[in-house]
Length: 431
Image 1 (cartoon, rainbow, N blue to C red):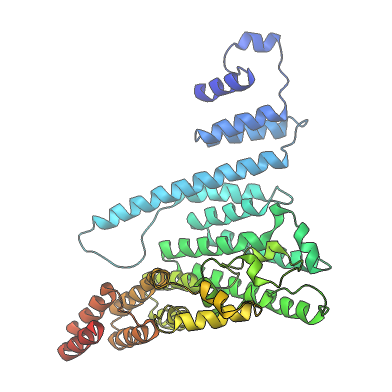
Image 2 (image 1 turned 180 degrees about the vertical axis):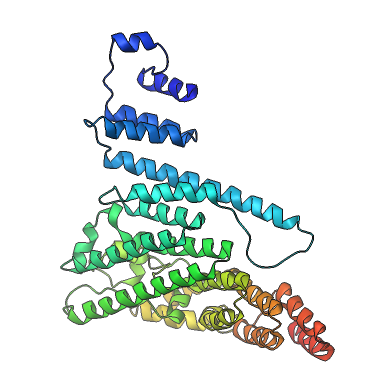
């Protein structure tokens, strides 16, 4: 269009629509940079058809083939547009649901035609790239998830998991990992991608996709844990020590690490070693499932009405919630910290003990999980499990549950005429 042509004219002095006669008299030889600029301008202005036409013209010329960089820019632009469209579609769905006369709980009914078409185009075009960088694959998986293309998002995630395993297999020694190319360092990119995909599942209430991702995450964590144990057994006594057990710790250990602020990567290794800093940079997040990850699965299950899954997920949340208990968390955190670096003194351990304010913040991040579970129990009339969940939550956390969870439980009991149990619950929470 005229706007795109004007930007080309200002940037490259190429007037495609301007003077047709001069274009015939003085032929202009278009290079790859001109096509790339034209495609970028079209995508920035939302002119997808023009961008595709420019790409097709580039292919038909025969002399110029789209470079890896051009394809990456094209895929990234499509991903960005898909996520923007998905956000707008969610806003429209929320508005329509708020206008309903009969308020219904559960998943939103979203029409994702625009976002899904753009994410599909990005997914198809990504296959033309021989070795896409990890940041691009991460954006592609998030775009597919936001657009509701869960199978495509899982395909991208699984390919990244395979590459992460291959990344470790191809290295002869642990120290060689320090020379990894940043654009193909999957272990650094994956933790953030896992959390983003689970957030998208929680937003849409798609528990099937959430379980897919949880299964893939746990499978990758299991494989890496086994390889780390094998590497540890083969390591020479004089070689540098990698604290791999904290990279892929058990649920309770991972929770303890999450609750320890200001722990640097250097504190996880003995002094003077040459351990891979690229791997240690993800210690704070880890590859396995954390407390917030289980919370996101809980929200997805609640919106889908799967009360049995909510009940099971509470057990996975238990170690994370227990570590926020005001009376026991500091002691447990110190013992975990002592296992990380045995050379530190007790005074040094105390410096890293979580403060009460920090513990309260961590608790609030997970408190939404109980509310989601109880709301699901309310919909499914599971009053006994609602009471049991609140009792366990109070015991684990040593804190009052959110009022939304308590009110939902009271509603279930009141609907069944169990006034005495409502009274007992309120008294227990107030204590």
